[in-house]
Amino acid sequence: MASRQRYDFLLYGIFVAAILLAPLMLEEFWLNRIAKYLVFGMLGVAVALSWGYAGILNLGQGLFFGAGAYMLAMSLKLASPTSLQQGSDKPVPDFMLWNAEPGALTQLCCINKGSFIWLPFQSQWFGVAMGIVLPVAIATITGMIVFRNRISGVFVSIITLALVLLVRLLVIDAQPLTNGFNRLTDLAWLTIGAFQFDPYSRATYYLVAIALSLVLVGARLLVSTRAGLILQATRDDETRARYLGLDVPSYQIFFFVVSAAICGFAGMLYVMVSEFASPTFMDLSFSITMVVWAAVGGRSSILGACVGAILINMIEAKVSETKALVEVWKAVVGLIFVLVVLYLPRGLGGFAHDLLDRWRARNAEAVPDEGLVAERRDTVAERG
Amino acid sequence: MAATALTIDGLEVSFGSVKAVNNVTMTIAEGELRVLLGANGAGKTTLMDLISGRTHSTRGHIHLYDTEITNWQEHRIARAGIGRKFQIPSVFRELTVRQNFEVASCRNPSVFANLGFGFSRQTLARIEEVLAIVDLRDKADVTAAYLSHGQTQWLELGLLMLQDPKVILLDEPTAGMTAAETKKTAKIINSMRGKHTLLVVEHDMAFVREIAERITVLHLGEVLAEGDIASIETDQAVRRAYLGSRSIS
Image (cartoon, rainbow over all chains, first blue to last red; front, side, top):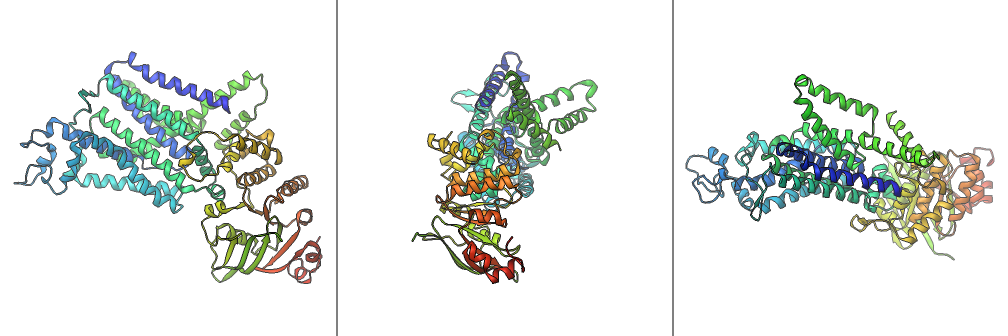
């Protein structure tokens, strides 16, 4: 087991090195794109944590991603030049002005009924902090209600799914406050001291790449703690864990919240890279897409799910821009999903583990390795 | 006389109009191994559910030593010192045998206390000990899902040993086992004797003879008889209710 872990960390090292060295080979347009995919990779990490390790299939990860994105976007919107030219010395988002009732005061406090909640967002760091705090708060409350009441399995999926759709509806409906369908656009760049993060710069890419590396390694370390082991135990058999005296819900809530925090963080990074926040982040299809990434990459492997997300997005970009495939690219991507699910039920991560074990077994002079045999049977069992 | 480990006092639970357990009173001394006998539907498993908190009683009290644990949540009862083995073996199937044991060794229930890595040398040594007792040493790194039925049962017994509760409830520990496996199970259970107070539900009379000191017979949710194995085997009421007219085979 110990040597398996060493290989694991070697793979993580290779991945981190690869994303940090990528700028040497790529021009800035591609850097921006890859940075987006790295953000999606971070979402893969979040899904692997909650689905693969906790056994909680959250179909509403987009809620946390969207919450993080909107919190930062509100701050960046107020810092944008478009908010500073509304005939007031204090910033007012342009869309609020367009929708304002005649004679309304052109002030953030009272241009419309709810606009005062934007006031603290004049500080960029308030937005950054809220980008983590809000997802964590929502996840804590949801988690307490769901897991303390022993709701599990498909019902958790249904509740989270309903929740993300509900919030999406609220965001669209609160058009005077959120600009609804029209998204928050024309955002300023994140500023640290005197430095501005131009989304098409290497600096932004490195920020995202380093953030992903930290989250990735952090999540990997987290699951190898005792708490991570107990979490996997609760996934396998909640009742057994409970009768060993473990407070199962507190483990589920903790990891649900960590997963939500990672999503919120990813949402903020996405806003920096793409310069908008949109209710489409909370579309059902986006949350389900995240789950597909993790399934292809291997939900029981944090690195696998992360790589899966990045690879799928790269393939999608390549295929959709190939002339011959413009009409059918979605079918091509769909076919890849089907093949992976049929032939690599544990995803790319599981496949990589199998290869590694096989290679190690050969190195060990073909001594039958229990772990390997178990691993193979595992594959067969899951296929059956 | 030894202290009383488990006191059950006038315990009752009804499901609709059925009284599954009706006014059951019994005490089990510290270190005792008590066998619960009874036909299907006699209320044996329900009694275990009540003690371990899976089912809430409608009347009566349960004390673990001096602590009343009636209707507590399962994990609190487990923390207080009651461990349970299920009729259908219940282990962490996707973890290895060793990892199963590591989970059972986590003494502190809190998430934050468990955010560290690894286990103390003492704990690891104890895990090796238990691996030897339940004879799973050469399977330590095998995923639990690939153990045989008997091995899975022993794994679960091992989990209980590491949890180290004061009182252990065993629900048909030999169900579905071969004769050889049953023998080995008896050996394991005998090795737990003295360190824990045991309450065992069992049907296999050969096995009961091997382990039992005192037997409590349940019938239709009530205590029918209590005594050592010889007095139970000759008890007329037990024969009528549980064994038909035949003697215990």
